[in-house]
Image (cartoon, rainbow, N blue to C red; front, side, top):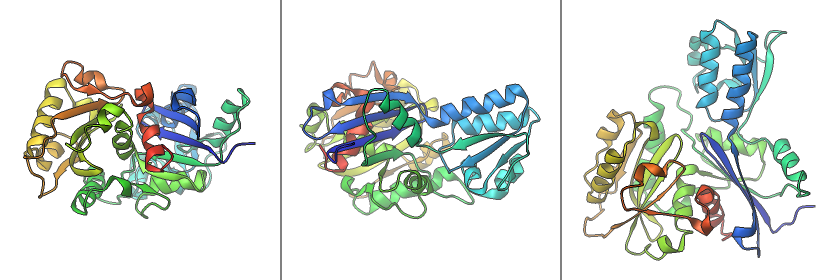
Length: 343
């Protein structure tokens, strides 16, 4: 039987899902940890197996993050093979069903008789329960889960739609403690999908979890009053934020594949100066940049801390690499727990 003092934090990324089973009263360094492939990676593998076997696929289950699995679906269609999806699962590909049909996926409650069923969802509780059971560890009843949610965008750019969320957040005061949800906004359909699979879970954006988690490193925490530039260089997205005493003054979000060490350093310098523009980031294929009108260059923000699995892009910069509780890959998990008031 699980203890009410246990909490499972899961940070779902494009490449990995990082998992921490936290138990109150136990040093975080001694808590159970796992870094395993994200569901989009395992789903993509199953789709490619069907492609190689030249059989149709039937996507069912829940809405989940796209990335690798959507690439595998489009590869399956390019191979001249059929793909079917339930209306909910189809939203993994595009929010607008007309766009899904245009790609070539058939939407309905059933697929062809010979189609291989493939279950879509970001969190697979039976799989987690089985994995933990191998070590005689019960699955906890309390969860906090981070995903990147673009929001339900039925037309136009989903990059702009997602970034509108950050723009509202900064405009309304940028308080970090407002970024974890018991009940996410209606347009955050990926977070709501998480809660269908894991009822009662607290949910958060991966970028927000990284910001919270960086301050779990004591060296970063001690600089919070003067202002810290927190940078999370993930497998898919890079986010840089100006954070001071729990307030985010500005941030930019881009795709990691488009980042270089020189570009990253330039962006961070101009973010601190307040001169990095939304138009520039978006034109380069990113989401955007927003800085509060009241931000003053007089604020210090001389301390830059880096986290994320692609932090090597900043390896020659002299920036500080955050290691909360000695484990960089669990930064988002520690952030989830801190935001939930568990740390």
